[in-house]
Image (spheres, rainbow, N blue to C red):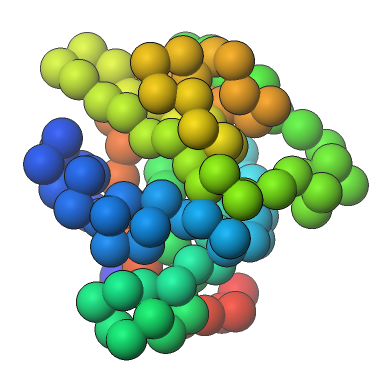
Length: 124
């Protein structure tokens, strides 16, 4: 399945559907190119009776990021979920509740666009 671009309305709907990844798991963090990063989460999908799925967010046009090693990545808590924001000129994702201040997150990615891809739970 190809990456689907998100706009503000579809982003809000997706985040509500997956409850902002609260109590999910970070599956992986993968730089795809020097300006494109994928971060993948295992989350419960409210639209599918709370079945577990994987959701990969792809941030393109990366302008700033605070990334962590794989060891630290596995230790980051999703108790507060994720913050994902976008407007006409930028898009960003952070681990935790950092509305309006994504750069304060322990892990964040800022870019120009964001898209997502749904995958089977635990699928590589």
